[in-house]
Image (cartoon, rainbow, N blue to C red; front, side, top):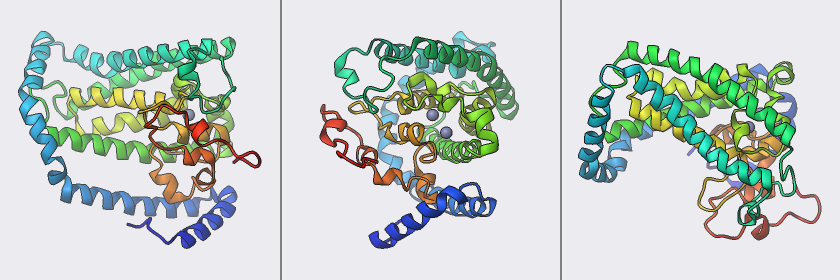
Length: 344
Ligand SMILES: [Zn+2]
Ligand SMILES: [Zn+2]
């Protein structure tokens, strides 16, 4: 693959990138070059999926086939219950359900953040002793902004999304999408999210935009779960909502897929901000490091950061060594402790 270089070559590349990154980060020429490279890699990814997608998903399809009737019957019941009220069903699936999931998860995390207990969770804190327990005034401000963004920004965008998707097709149709199609959609949504989030996020780090819009999100150098949507309204539209909403709108997705995707996106952004590297959950080290250092790790999955070298400093840190799925109960700050000097 394109990224497979020899170690020494890669290290030299990293050093060059690291030294030029600071000044070149916002240079339009370099950014355009990077966009072209990204288009190549993502294009290759799509071709790969198109070529091997069927065999990759064949086994999963067999499971789905066995339980497919169950899901279809369940959907038929829901569909009949809401007959004639497609809009209500759409808002329930793409607004109320994801935000319900968001608040249940964040409610639990807040219990830990505000009390600093229980210790079997707090021992997994990435930035230990920082903001634990959180400052109530700062937290109150964050909650207000999050509620505002959800009600007055996400709400209207979901309504607009409903009209756009309905215009393309029938998002609440009686038939569930096939397993292959739903999986392919989720893959496309993820790619679109990575691309749109990475570039819009990097744009918000441009000095002229940063101080007006993105600085607010970065007030939390040791983030907590709900900081994921603690942002200026413009940032919330461009960087938080659009990258997630655009996929289902473009593909005219079924409500079940859009709903699942919205929940996944909110859970995933909550985990990446939560500040605890818990066992058997995706590692939040990458975005946590972004909050700590500001000029590294701009993307969601890290693909574009690797491509553009915006993870070069991150990859020399302990946090990078800890950026794995934790499969034991020992916190990574214990198994991979900070160096006595220098550190990052
Ligand atoms: Zn963040
Ligand atoms: Zn940022």
